Every structure is written in structure tokens, then in C-alpha cells.
Amino acid sequence: MATNTIIPFEATHPGTLIKDELEVRDEITQKDLATLLGIKPSFLNEIIKGKRPVTANMAVLLEKALGISADYWMKFQSQYEIDIAKIKEKNINKIKLIEIWNIITQYVPVKYFDKNGYLTNDLSSNISVIQSIYSVKSIDELVNKISERKFSFFKKSEKLQIDEKNMIAWTSLVEYEAEKKEANTFNFENLPQLNIELQEIFFINKDVLKLVDKKLAQYGIKFLLVDKLEKTPIDGYSFWSINNPVIALTLRHNRIDNFAFTVLHELGHIALHIRKNKDSKFIDLAETEENELEKEANNYAQESLIPPSSWNDLLKNYIPLSDENIYKFSNKYRINPAIILGRACFEMNYYGVKTSINKKLY
Image (cartoon, rainbow, N blue to C red):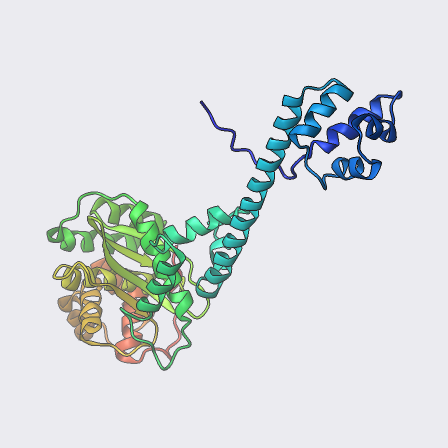
């Protein structure tokens, strides 16, 4: 038998029925009814206003006076008391939800999740969503996890203003979305071929985001683009999710050279470091001091984008560097000219030279 779980906004006291009956019965007034019941008019008035219950004795008297069964009056009174209890419990639960939400707002940038469509007008649902994103089952677990996770896998930069709450929110959201994303079976041995095919996408520079997502999924790598928050100078994030590696980017710079280098940098972490330890996580922060693992990932990206033999050819046969020479070199090796220019700026201090090379990501 189904149970009625509907909780009324307001409980209806049986005194309301007495009032309605008196309004439709012209032949009897409230004073007359009180006389029939053998009670004071003030006592009856308190029942009508819901200040007194309809007792079993009163239910029998009302049956005689109004012709409505005592059983009905008792059921009405019982339902009223049940509704009162449910409303009270509902209000207690509402208070608990508000208290939980107030704690959540101290640790979670809820406006960010609201802006990105994860939250609704239902507080209970929003709490469940936040717990799912942070992979916890209670508010206590959420607080503990955030406290333990603060910079557990990235070092704070003295050069940058970093909001720990926002940083944890971004990485938690990436991990949450990664679990839902599908990709083919991954094989570390296929990475060299993947790098070659990515290079062609970068060279053509058309629908890059869509094509990179498709290409990485084809090779079993989950790819995510997630908007950054304030004071979260993140470029990329790589880690292992269930059966696949993940690369997540913020796209802070809408440039093909930056995008290509970041993708290959994270692929470097997958190929060199996550391969050895699938519990490791790597977050790429701007302007942070490089450790040995980051240097290795940088070298992997650099040599994947422009192999050493090709770079030596550039240094030997295309100097002094100019836009014309960069385009010649680009067409010879099918390397996007902005990627060549980016490395030249980094290694050869080419920043001050005027150039017409377009770095925009398309």
C-alpha cells in the first residue's frame, strides 16, 4: 500500500470545519452551537481558532449537534496532529540543510558551480551535487577532505596569488567530470603515434579543440576543458581516472603555441610519470619553479613539437630568423609557425622582433 508522503504547507485544524458549517447553516450561530454542546462560547471559539483540540468527547457532541460522525472528527484531528508533526520535522530538516549549506559556502565557491549550471533552487539537491563533485558522503567528510587536500599535490608559488578553495574546487570538478567521460582503451605504447597525429592538427590549426578531444579519446585519453576560477592560474592537469589517463585544461591563453605545448606537457607526465605511478597527479601552474618532473615534461613537450634534429636544422640553415624563414621551416616539417615562434622566443630571446605570425587558436 502506498504511503502518502505529501506534506501540506499548513495543517488544517478541525475547527475550520466547524466554522465552515456555521457559515452555511443560517439556522444556527456559534453561540447556539456552544449552548447545544454545553460549553462556553469562548471555549468553542478556541476550538474554531485551532487553539484547542477536538477530543473524543467533543467529537461525540459534534456528531449529535451537526450530524457529522464522531469518527470523522477524530480522523480530522488525528490528521491535523500528524501534519503538524510532519511540518515541524520538515522545518527541522530545512534548518539542518541551511546549516549544512552555510558550512559548504565557507569551503566551496558555490557561485562558480551555480554559474556553470550545476546548482538549482533545491537546497537538498545542491548539497548532494556538491558532495558528488567533491566525492564525499557528508559535510564532515567534505571539510576533512578539503583540509587534507590543501596543496597535497602542488606547491604554492610565492609569485602568484592562489586561492586554495578555488584550486581544490577546480581539480575536484575536473575529477568529477572525468569519471563521467568515456574513452577508448588506453595503451602507453601508442603515445608516439598520437604525438605525430596531434602535430598535424596543430599545424592545420582549424577546429583544434574538437579534433584534439576526438583524437585523445580515440587513443584512450579523456580530455576536458574546464573554466578556471579567480586566483587559479592553472594551465593543465593530468592524472589517472578509473581506466584512462586524463588531460584537463583551462585555456587561459587562446594561443595555438600555448595550447599545443600544454597538451604535450601533460602527455609527458602521462608517458613518463603516471605510467610509473597511477596515483600521481600533476597540475601545471603558471610561473612556478620547475622541479625535476616538470622539467622532464617540458622537455617531452618541446621535443615532441619540434624534434631535436629539426631544431638543429633550423639553427643551422634558417638563421637569422625571420617570418619568411619560419614559414619555410614550418612547411618543410609541417609544424605550426606559431609553435616555432614560441620556442624561438623562449630559447633565442626573439620577443622584440616584429612578426606577422598569427598565434591565435582556431
